[in-house]
Length: 381
Image (cartoon, rainbow, N blue to C red; front, side, top):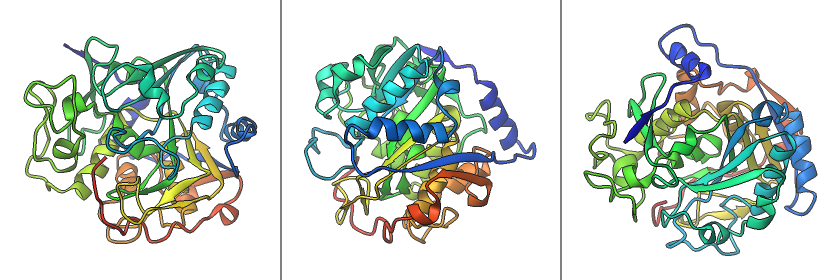
């Protein structure tokens, strides 16, 4: 069974903008802070950062807050181990949950899509998350693996407000609709296809592999074992029956075209209300250990803001990239620029001159992330 999701006023505004009603990308504030490590001081550093970005009161007070982590990479193929810091750091999860609780969140629902697609707290614990401490952050905490129906009984049908680049609508786990606000906690790093991956690319993981995985089949598969390559990246398979099909089956069957556009679709149906991007310790040259040539880098930064496009635009500039760069230029070596695609449909601005930067200034925050993902991809994630 599929439940229709009624769009918010914000989403209706996006739809109007995309329909040609003179969209004006919002001017937004993005805050940058220096943070050298993940020690006990991370709470105070993160608190000062979010305060500079406008605070969490409007996002949290009296609300159910969905918090999407970035635990990328099937851990059955790429076990969680000490080394390359390309997944969400556990200390940032605890600190952000404590801040949301202090800001008045009625409930925090921690979300991610991973394998195996089960509701088992041991699967969360393998990422190094301090489950007990997070559960005692000061408010009710729930955990949901959204790689299938999860704890829900039906998928939620969400229409793309601007009509969609690839699909007109998506079927997602109920948790992305059953919340009052949505927060993203991601890493500052490159991506082999999209060039960069922060807030917006984190939304690619919203699609459940039970419906968008390569082994979903014609009827869906609540125990998926494969990622989204065939349906999402390559378009060589269609979603199951009953799930919205592509708008333009004749469009390029090419990941560099498809992935950035699917990301924008998903950022339109589930806009991020507050973004935190961790650039304390991370990697460059790709999004995970399945990219050859990736290496550890320590920018010592945290970034936060209310608009997903504006936050990622500042992140790109911090990485020493042109946020308005075109395909074929670093870091957009293999894919179209997600920031520009999002700006074109009114989701935010990719123009630094329209974004207020608070805290650490760009000249002090800028870090050389190199030419981008120039190595080979040795697997998929």
